[in-house]
Image 1 (cartoon, rainbow over the protein chains, first blue to last red):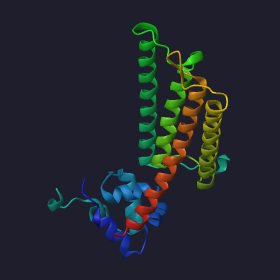
Image 2 (image 1 turned 120 degrees about the vertical axis):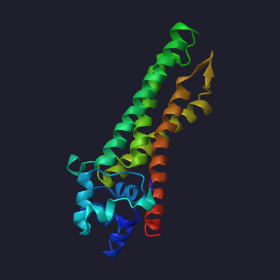
Image 3 (image 1 turned 90 degrees about the horizontal axis):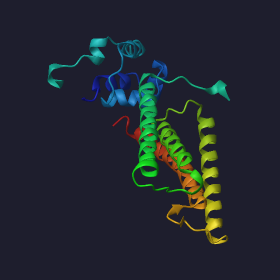
Image 4 (image 1 turned 180 degrees about the vertical axis):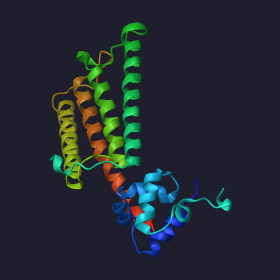
Length: 69
Length: 152
């Protein structure tokens, strides 16, 4: 699975570390790292939580562009 | 102690399930192999005093705990985790020390009559305990590298 660069960029735009985003989303830092690296596909519930923290929509963070497929 | 028990997130729950699965198959597989060796096919008894089952159970337990330590799914706070790891290391070193003492001063052997002696088994148990702490320390090093690399 490709890396989730949109998530990483959105996190960086808010000047948040993985640990801070993880804590705000209610998961461990290792889990957030796995999501960003593309090693784990989070549940829709977790995706929504992350989107709320970063102020983005599901499409903006987790929709795959055709170029990624 | 249980005030600091933390809940696991969804990925940690999956990893915990995998850890239990691996330990279960280790236990069942090792037990089956042991039963075949001991009772049915070769008639081999590889440890004195019927310690084979204890060794298999302890080994399976160590597989479980090592996987917990590697994936960071020990359900306690950081301080309690470190305390447990220190306890494992101290216990392991003590058991290895007892083994070395037996081997050096009591002139015990590692094998006797084709069986692993209790002294050697104690040393093996000690090494298993120490390996848990080693796995935990390796995990901490990996986490620090991930921390450093997260914004690359």
